[in-house]
Amino acid sequence: MPSSTFATRAGGLLAAVALAGTMTACTAEPVPSFTAPTMAPEQSLTDACSMAGIDVQQLTQDTEMKLQQGIAEAAVKFASGEEISLQSLTGPLEAALTDLESQVTHSELLASIGEMRAALRGFQDIPSPESALGVPGYLSELGAQLQVLTQAGERLQALCNAG
Image (cartoon, rainbow, N blue to C red):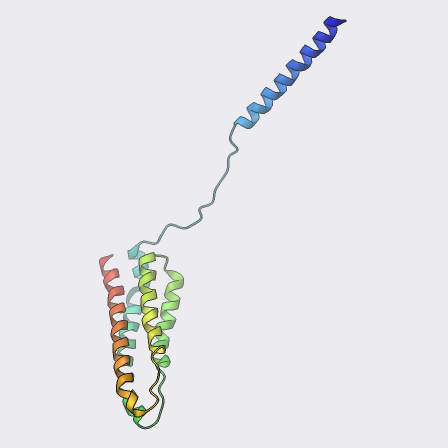
C-alpha cells in the first residue's frame, strides 16, 4: 500500500503544482487599464487671448474713460451733498472678466485677469469722505486706483501681444 499512497500523494502534489502554475501564469499578465487624464492640456496663450480679444480691451478703455468722468463728477456731487457709486461704472467690466474667466484656462492670462479684478475691487476699498474736507483726498485715491486699473489692463494687453 505504500506505493499507492505515494502515488496518490505524488499525483496530488503534481496537481497542486500544475494548478499553482496555471494561476500564476494568469496573474502574471497585467490587467489592461485606462486612466483618464486628470487635467486638460493648458490652452495656448494665443487661443486664450483670442477669447479675451478686443472686447476686454474695449471694455477696459470704456471703463477707464467712465471712471475718469465719474471722478470729475464726484467733486461736484460731493459738493452738493450727493453720494456717488462707482459700481455702475465698473460693473460691465467686472461682468466681462467673470465671463472671460469661465472660458480661459491659460494660467498666465487668468492671473492677469485676476489682477484686473483686484484693481476693480480696489475702488470699493476706498472709503467715501465724511465731509467736504475729505473730498480732495478721496478724489486723489480714486485717481491712483484708476492708474492701478490702467496698468493692469496694459499688462493684460502686453501679455496677449507677446503671445
